Length: 462
Image (cartoon, rainbow, N blue to C red; front, side):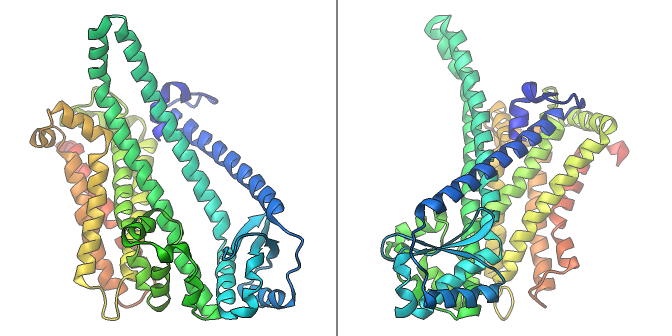
């Protein structure tokens, strides 16, 4: 979407003359798929070469071989075990090389199989759990998507910088005054793009890391159920020796949870979910960003003449009359994506429940964190920054100029709080989601859709 809106002039009918108002979006999606395939292919080649380079001609041995066969049979996988070099205390690693599940076993861990069998079994079971869940392939796909998305964001920002440089070159022909005038003209677009793209990139990175840490917690839980809990397996982790400030930073940016948190999670599953409540902020930001993109596609990106509420009503009605499939497709996609984000947060809230159900503190904390993410998405959006600058940074004037946008955001926040409250009642009877609880996750999006219809559909059509 970002690349399509930035390079609409180039992507429109680039390969196929599809016509219509959104051909640049379809070509951008095709370009994304091609780039994803290239990155995944390159990752497979590099993984195969890395495994070949690190593997040593060292026999596994009967003790380790027996443990591997026993645990692999319980997980239903048939891994290839490669002995690698490495420093003392190096971790066991699982991956997929040349299409085959592979376990990289550092030579220093071979001794641990005899000196500390419980810790060795737990570490090995943890990696086999990753293979059984197909985590490595999922990581490759997700990381490739983030990498391609990041490259597209850089490409969009380079277009902005190119326009800035062009304006400065033109202004330079008129001397210092021309350059100063050009700088004043490009300052706001440059600032809005920097804030919007920077905040999105930062939160996507944090979301990716949080998802990887959750995956580690799940693998720990599975390993504990198979081989028994063994908190001593985390004793050698570097994170165990970090100071408190570094531990907090580590908990945000590292792909593995802190050792103390993993130890607590073995005894209490809620500890794993409390450790990454930042994901609630991220999901709130994601849901609000989806709504913002839908609003821009339907109201802002199509015409520079869309300014007043009456003009936006006329414009949306014209788009709906001329391209109904595309308009409803955008609305339906936005509702589906927001419902997924809401489901992930509400399910996380359910995992935080105690034996007596959710505490009110947890409920309010989750709702406030979700609202914080939504507000951050609004404040960092290009449309908001542009409109409020046009209103001389007067918040009341901006609300009067664009009343539907803040109300739609508030509808999403209050809709989520209401959905979370209902889900608390429904899911209090069990931990598994039901069709009813899944339908509850649609409430915020449906409330936002109703709010948008109230503002943007002319009164005579309501």
